[in-house]
Image: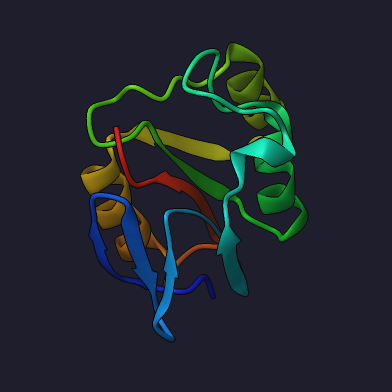
Amino acid sequence: MSPEITEHGWGRIVVEGDRVYKDVKLFPGGAREWDWMETGTSHSPGVQPADVEELLESGARVIILSKGRFNRLRIQPETLSLLEDRRVEVHVLSTDRAVSLYNELRREHPVGALIHSTC
């Protein structure tokens, strides 16, 4: 099961066990800091296929991508194509809606998420 997000606000996401992140990768069995520098991600062009690979490798069959609180983080079309090709259900939402849906689905599905806590 994927861990629960217990709190979130500007620049802060708290995951069960009181682990605090700025941006977070969540997946079945764990969570870790989402370090954009690992893949060269930036607001534009946005979330890259490499950003979701770890979620897929962890067995996520539903993936939630947060576009930030003001929808400034873009999602590369190649990322969506990769998920479609792998027959993974994907939801692209603002941060508040992404957190709500993630917490709702995490008990019933192998879910992964990339949550951006700011803009």
